[in-house]
Length: 288
Image (cartoon, rainbow, N blue to C red; front, side, top):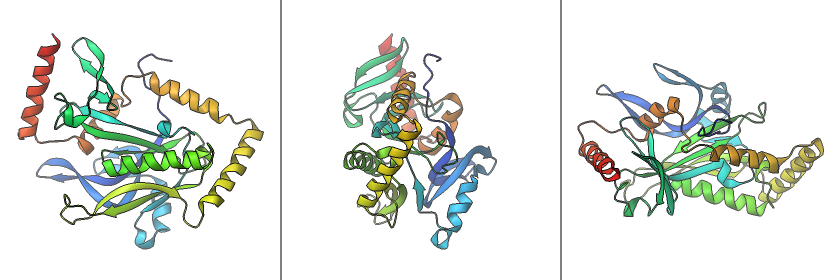
């Protein structure tokens, strides 16, 4: 295994609730009120739709894709959803600091340093720029038992809800999270900050038409069949944990541009852009 290379679950495509649009010569993210399942191929018009997008969209009311039947690969919730506070270089799209509210790993002139993480509101380095950043891996098509689709988000509502659901289902099922029939569901809410305009976030529920008790019975049956066939869920979780811990940051070079565009893009002439440049210069001087 190459040291320093984060080994993430194999990716077959992406799940998003928005798209990139061009405005005044700039590519900007635009929120949507439905899911889009895309492949890993990007064209001039954006990410190419995955064939599963058409299949599930045609089965949805008014062809609005607001639910997707899924399963997760791992029994440990934190392996399916990796969430942290992240500070990205808005210009290169490269992660500079990643923390959990207690500890962080920060890229400095001397290399990567382990430092305290006081959370974005109390951190001088990350204030106004550090965001929660989550990556959820789910399986949609059972044809590839080890392939996943990734949903990335910087939304507190999605991260908080997905974290709670994964932990609760793991506990309620007696550790059979990876065998439960689940469903990604798009939900809307209004807040004072949104000025009564609906904002959308992602939830994870038991599939429609199935009670929790029925889902647990299904999970028990699937888990038993897998065990009888020699499938080792614990070993799979351990392998995933080792692979994720092998790298400093999860994003690889080829993903940085799309991550920057979707979540961390700001105009070059904005006040925030100037603040970032000043802060980065100060951080470099302080580390000398």
